Image 1 (cartoon, rainbow, N blue to C red):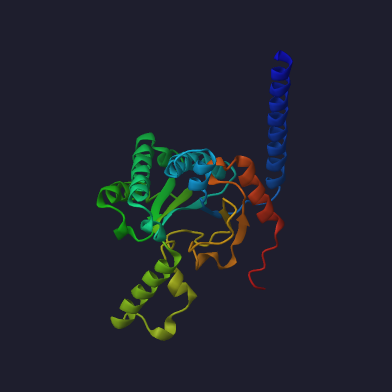
Image 2 (image 1 turned 135 degrees about the horizontal axis):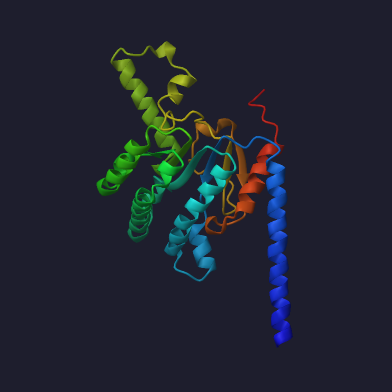
Length: 267
């Protein structure tokens, strides 16, 4: 029996060493070329991960929320200055009330944690929630607005949380804004161009509003209404790993894939 245990322990140790060496090799590879300036992440698969572990599926959101800080640190360490996380869509509001309430609570708890630990100040990160903010409970928006005001002057990093967000809704809001300006005589219809729309999107505050790379976890291969305008020329990488199990190796592999592609922007 002792021999079997020792054999298993040895195999686990070898696997860990192999992963460590692989990660080191990936770091060397991606450091040879510029990293993406802006990454968007569709954090998918929380519920399916929980079910695969025999847990209540809503608990997947708890473990998914814990992964966020870790991934942000990896991004910043790799020189990625702007990260947009797809946390909660307008469609997600149609899910069972118990699940929606849990997600709201997790979001509130994370906001309080961020304020207490002052991590955004340490990294000089500008924080912003993008989406239909009127759909977010007022109690939560108090924390959101406080953090946004406190970090408004930072420009080292940008963290955008897409919450109660929908890409189509974002474009509709931009069109409404333009229509109001036209009706008020502030804008001529013939002057409307792509820049006119871009400046009225939720991401207009960013130096790089269009993500270079969008990663989606869980194996699904679609954007699901995420940054529809901004993603016109984004590189897309779909990964067959649930969000709670997303590793630094997975991020490095996605960046390596991005770096291997020749971006032509339609040319």
